[in-house]
View (cartoon, rainbow, N blue to C red):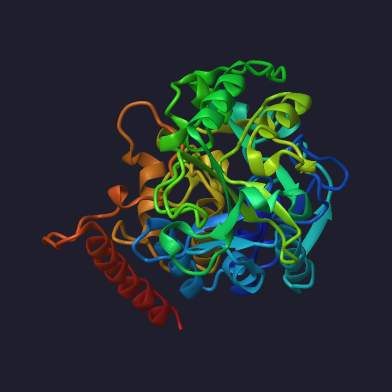
Length: 434
């Protein structure tokens, strides 16, 4: 009999199962794929990246960069496989999504303390359970969660960006560079003039959207705002968002273009590129028509169009404690985006914390109690009660981490100081556990 059952083999579920297994605890990991897939999933592999292939900034002056480094030092499976399968992306960490997922899958299924059951879970089993079924949870599990929490929770909508082939990009209208020439030239930059941009925005704002039951622009999480929604907010909204030209000089003119669409490598072979920030739920023919107005994409071959799906999350401050356990029944924990953490790394981090603290509970060891001075601890404390007013999904940010208590000149230097303080705490936690 398993000590712990983990439901869902996404980023959070795999990380939680890995941490438990490393501690010598037997885990049953339940995954409904390939028997059943959500509308956003296409692969049979675990830890599938359904949106961008970017895990965002890898620098310590950025909160997600700090969170990643904390996870590396704590022995994260997700970070190990991400670092192994990274592709060029300037100051960000992006991965070859297929190789990344394949590596995680192999490590999970080959671990002697993990038994994988390929079947949809229709009831919550006895014993300790970690529910990491993701933001697309529906059907039997959604009904069980509703019965557990007494609420159908909250919701927002998430979107996926299109992918094009490198060979189909018109490079006479584009160039390789990273913003401010930072790092290596990993992005394809597609410039637009004032006339091209305004015509593009006009068509984008009026393009026909795919029907999505219950869709409401006001319910869209800001970090995944569809480009057509941004276009309707004002003609310059995109120029201050994903199409901002700041720090990108066109080598043909030596000047910043009026607007720039960036493409980021999506596989290690460099044959596929995704449209950065171009989440959308336009109809597929409309995506082809409107996005082909971008000069560099006039002949683009779209191997995947953008799609939109409903994401569901819990009212976690009311329901969960700092260990992501259900307050009403502490044998049940949650992990991943359904807790209200937003982003790949945040999801994996929640799974890591749940896995480590559940292991401590099973083995009758003291909880770690990650403090708010750490990114992983601050995220858990925010989710479990640190929000004010209506609870919304949250990316990790320095605003939820305990301030330094003294002044440091310059935002980047202050953030680095916060990160160094956090990593000292993490290193001591690692040392104490050895």
